[in-house]
Image (cartoon, rainbow, N blue to C red; front, side, top):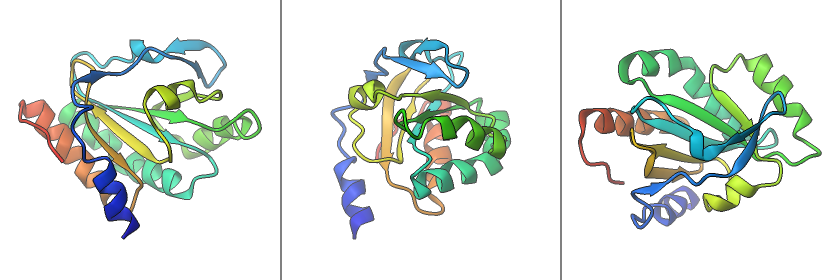
Length: 165
């Protein structure tokens, strides 16, 4: 299946331990920010690349939104949503995010600089970092229930256990 193929494509480990690269992105109110400064006080982060035109992306982030408060209470995890909408569709991002009431940190990557630096081809593409900002896990695509894998990985990180696909 395509999902299995996508999963196999990201099941490589050469990326493990790679830091999140420092690339300029924009906040939803248009200010510059550096992805290299994404931090969560020594706790794990989930970085989701998504777009308003990507149904599976929105399904993923909306599913996580339902459990995000619980995840934060339990593990301290922070989710950062990176919109890869281009200049034509990026104006829709703010109204979509506000309409959903997401509690995530959201950024715009209109020129796809961060997307390229993270080797993202197709959204949704989700990365999980350890408390030091090292990428330890990633997943491409989304099907209902995938979010339970994400919190399992985060729990392992919090417990100091090794993470693998």
